[in-house]
Length: 430
View 1 (cartoon, rainbow, N blue to C red):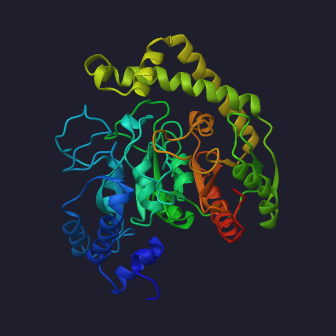
View 2: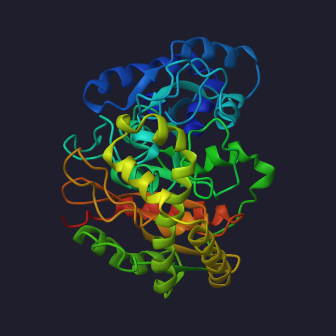
View 3: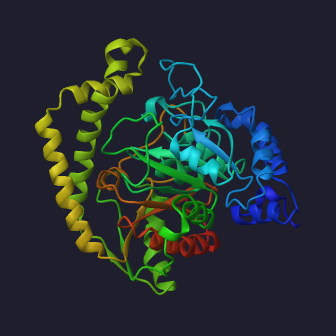
């Protein structure tokens, strides 16, 4: 084999196990060695599993062709893994090990994946960062709150990781760390066994090295019979951020390239003329997130206020001041916007825009702004983050593709073609 098995695509790694070129235990051991080598600098892991080799042996012992046979998995430390505590980036939660896997972890294990351990998250999935560093520039943030998962995948130590998103918790770190990422449509996956902030917003996500790997894992996770293959969407709307935040010059330059890139694959594109909706959605997202977080994390606020970060205290205090009528009004506006975006996208159009304001900011004291994901997360749309673009300094830039629930295959088809072109394109000026 020309490359070590762990550097191959996920499908090819599974194929190497099935054909006897390697074993699941060997794959898992190589991943653990890569983790151990990079962890002193990367700091992406909270706790590593002591049973991963035994778990790999069990996968092989069933003599069944699992679609993720021997594939190593990192799990964000908001998500329960049996035998490991769920600490959620906080000292408040119990150090007692979880009794059972969250359903999403159980599903991936049933497909043959092997848990390597728990990855770093920000405090309760909000803004206080953990110790993780960006794999492409250790003096820069990996983003938040799926920081450990994104950094581990971006560093090439693990091929697959679970994350979650409430605002920009997966799209931003995927963009900063140069990984592919997917946020499932809100409500489409079971969220029990996951520490949350907002029931109207919390969603599950996946991180892999490429969109091809992402599509492979997604199809296995949801079941291939529910994910019909399709070609490219019939058109794309290019979104430039609706002035929600200042975009760095490399991201502006990348967005300027998109119409020509889309034309190259034969896809008609036009600007997204929806700024009023987007800005209203972004503001309403903040209202709903704060209101629901204050009620979801009421125990922590009332019993452990002194142990919370200033950022989380501010969020919960803000949420306690929001009335039920304000919360309801925001949800009603969201539902109207859902109808509007459905009319715009029809069945087979997508939106393509920035996944973050630019490359990862310097410093580790903050995680960057989630504002470019807020409107879309509030709508509950599925999202695919496409890697491949880089600045002249070698820093990753990600774009996000959004579509309607149930039409995820258009996002993958577009993402695969876009990633291929972006990886071959010249770097964007820093």
